[in-house]
Structure formats: C-alpha cells, structure tokens
Length: 149
Length: 128
Image (cartoon, rainbow over all chains, first blue to last red; front, side, top):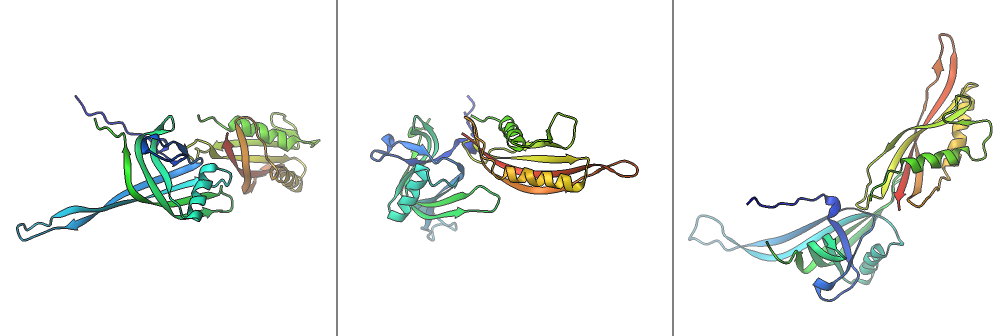
C-alpha cells in the first residue's frame, strides 16, 4: 500500500495565539488575523562524544530549543496582536500554535510556549502597515497529531 | 472564502468619481469630456485570510478641448479618490495610492484630436 502523504499550502498552516491556559490538549487558540507568513525552527545542539574506538565523529542530542517568526498586517484593535504586545511589555510568555486547527484546538502542527524577542512595525509609504513578531520557544513543544500512524 | 473585489471597486469608482460633477460623462457614453476606469488588475491576497489585496486601475480623463482640460479633470479625480472610503458588506477600501501618470494624445495627420491623461492608481482593499 503506498504511503499517504498530504502536502498543504502555507496558507493552511497558520499562527494561532492561545486564548486559554491549562492542559495543552484543552487550550483554545485564535488565529492571528491578517497573518502573511510564519516560520518555526526547532533546533537541537549536538554534543560530541567521539572517542578513539572509531575514526568517525559521534554525537548525542543535546539541548533542544526553537524560535518562531510571524508577520501580520498591523491592527492595534486586534485582540491577538495586542495580546502579543501586552506579553512583551509585561515580560510574560504566550501560548502559540502553528498548524491546522479543528474547532479551535490543534489537529496538526506544533504548539509551544514562547517569550517574545521583538515586535517590529513597518510603516512604508504606499503600503499596508505590517508587524513582525519574533519568539523564542520555552520548554518542550507539543506535536500534533499526538498519535502516529 | 475568497471573493473578487472587481465589481466592488468598479462601482465604488463610478459612484465616487461621478458624484456632484456635471458636464462630464462616465464610461459607456461616446461623448466628451469623459472619464473611464479600465485595465483593472486585482492582485492576489497578501494574507492567509484571503483578505488584503491591491487592485490596480487606470482612471482615464479624456478631453477634446485641451491638455489642460484633461489635466484638470485628472486633478479633480485624484481629489475625489483621496477620500475614497467605500465599503459594503463584503469589502472596504483601506486606502488609495496614485502611482503613475501618462499623457497619451491621439492625433490626426496634422493635429491632436483627443487629449488623454491616464492616471494609474493602486487601491488597497480588505475583504471583510
């Protein structure tokens, strides 16, 4: 039986902000309206454990982490955008999800808690104003779907 | 769900440009002086909600009297479009940006017979 592979447009993998807290599986998310693009990078630092038993280097997985970026059309009346700004000002973390939702809960993608590194507004002449948000993942992300086929 | 903004923009332009102006014909009527909106280009949405996009359009002012007459018509058009804030249940205008102006007269063998000013405009639209 051929492997089932279901690619999707970037349009369908959106950036969401948590509107509730608690158990990751029960958190509700709302789309960051006006989103143009996002990216998520998960990283793992390799730790070298080479020895003289082999001519080849050996590594084990070290500390993991991640970053995320999202760009939206700026709207100071949008609840999710203001939640991100409030979070930066207050120095608190935010709950985020990048992927596909089903009834406001994650179905496929990456959910994570993050702190905000930077929020930059761009107001160019003759263009719609945009807002770029950079985040750093804190703690372990949750990957959806949680069951593997 | 994506909807085309073409009909909304075409109607908004006609309504805005014709408001309160007498002696100027708008589209469809073979008489002068005349204003026509044409060469609409609706660009793809720039966000994942299929909402914000740019519609480029040429607003053409045509006079048989003089280049100055066509230029004045264009100036009046721009003044009206600067306040373009049309909205309906599906769309609203975010803003307008004039981008390029071309003067293209039509000539006979010996003289100019039509004075045409083509004003390109980018209209930023939000689908609601």
